[in-house]
Length: 387
Image 1 (tube, rainbow, N blue to C red):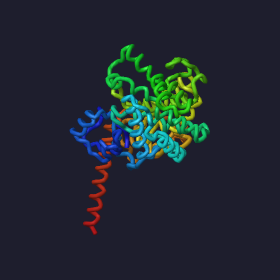
Image 2 (image 1 turned 120 degrees about the horizontal axis):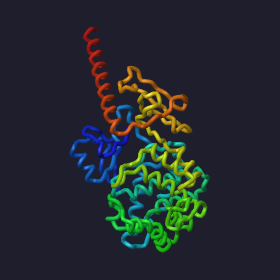
Image 3 (image 1 turned 45 degrees about the vertical axis):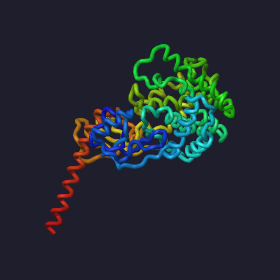
C-alpha cells in the first residue's frame, strides 16, 4: 500500500486501511473501491490522504507501535478528557492512566519495529489522534533512554495531555486554513500555559514533571521557543522528548492548511534541526526507528533506474531492499532486479518519486501485470487444448 493525498486520489483506487473517528466509528473501511461519490465524501469529511492498494507489493497488515484497538481507546479517552476542559468541568482523566499503561506495555512489546506509516484521520479529529501518536513515539524514546515504569507513565501522560490548552482556543482559530494574524499567533502560543494552569488545578494528582512537560513542550533548546524562551537543560527532559515526538507527528499529518510531509522529508528536517531547535541526542534516538522510505515507496537510484522498496532493514533504515523494474528512459525492465542498498555502496538513493510521477508509473506497471496474466491464462488454455 502507499499513501496518496486527496487531490491525487482517482476513481478505481482501493483503500487498504480503515479510518475511524474519535468515537471509534469506522468512517472509511479497508477495501473500499473509490468512485467519484466516495472522493467527494472524503473531501467533505476533511480527509487529507488515504492509504491505497499498491500494484508493486503483496498487501500486508502493517504493525504499529500500538494496536489499532489501543489507539482508538486512547483517542476516545483523550477526547472525553479534553471535552471536560472545553466544558470547564473538573478533569477526571477518564481512565487516562490506564491508557498510558497500555501504551507503554505495547510499545515495549513492539521491540525493534521500524515505524513506516501513521494513522490517517479527519482534520476535526487531528488533535486527539495526534497526542496519542506523540505518546507512543515519546514512549519509544523513553524506553531507549532506559526509563523505569514510573518515568514512562509520567512521560506518556504528559504526552496525552500536552495540547489540552488548545481546548481553550476557539474552534474557528483551530480550524483556520489561511494565514494567521499576529494576534492569532499570540493566542495560540498561550496554550501551554493555559494547559499547565488547568492541570495543576483540576488534576492535582499529576506529578510536577508531567505538568511541566505540558508547559514546556514548545520550548526550544536555542531559546526561541515559548512560553518562557528557556534553553537546553533549563527545559525539563520530558518536554524535550515531547518536542521531538510532537514535531515528527505534526509534520507527517494532513492539516487543513497543508498536506502531510513524507517520512523521508520529515527525517531530513529533524536531522537539520538537531542541536538547534531540538535536543540532538533525542533526535538521534528517534530517527533510527523511523523508516524514511516505507514499503511501497517508489525511488530512483543513482544509476537512473526506478524501483520499489520491498524490505526494511533494522540498523540500515535509510538503505532498504529495492526491486528495480524500470530503466532510466521510463521503460519497464524485461527482468526485475532485487538489490540491497546497504550492500551496494555505489548505488545511492537519488530521490523519492513524487505522487504525480508515481501514479502513472503504477498504472503502467498494473497494465503490464494484467497483460502478463492474460497471456499466461491463454498459454494454459492452449496447452490444455493441445493435450
